[in-house]
Amino acid sequence: MTTRLIAPSILSADFSRLGEDIEMINQSDADYIHCDVMDGVFVPNISFGIPVIEKVAEIAKKPLDVHLMIVNPDNYISAFQKAGADILTVHYETCPHLHRIVSSIKEAGMKASVCLNPHTPVTVLDDIIGDLDMVLLMSVNPGFGGQSFIKNTYKKVRLLKEMIAAKNQSCLIEVDGGVNFETGLNLYDAGADVLVSGSFIFKADDPIATINHFKTL
Image (cartoon, rainbow, N blue to C red; front, side, top):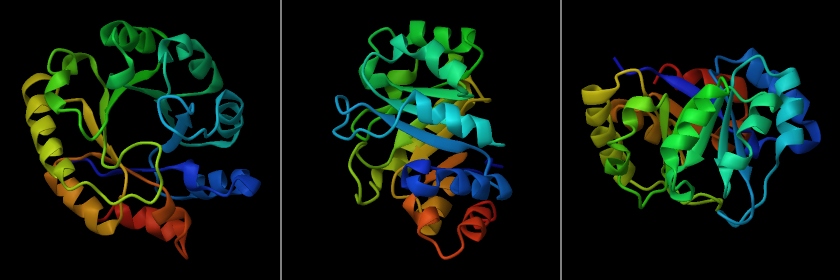
């Protein structure tokens, strides 16, 4: 039975009332709070950084799932741990010394996750999957809003699930991009454990009910 976890992405929150949106997530059945950190280099947008993570951590009652869409993430591992990150995700595409970075994340006391862009095959993680707590698959190209869900993601989830079953059954599969009830159900059925959803949740008439419904798909 696939785990059904949900991680609302605060990138879609109203930053003029961010504290209220965090409290809303606290009151919901959400499992994590997903925080997208963008540097304007690896991806074209700039989002927020360590000061915002620190403030979110002060309010949050859910673990912080921090996704670093930045170059040289190894320079910031300690800083994000001190800011309050519980799970730290780095991109395979930015880490030539991936094993070293994963080890550093774990040594800092956080869970280690690696993200793959849509064009990157899951097989690149074959030699390190045994060391990971989670793999994040992007189902849109990171850094751009309003994109359509890339259907090849279902195939990638199934292949990754096979790798995990063979090498590291405790590793979770997370998917981010274009996640709604339809794609979410299909992703759960394919083997995903954690769904990241942003605008679909925060633009809903009842965000708490929307979050909670993901758990019952």
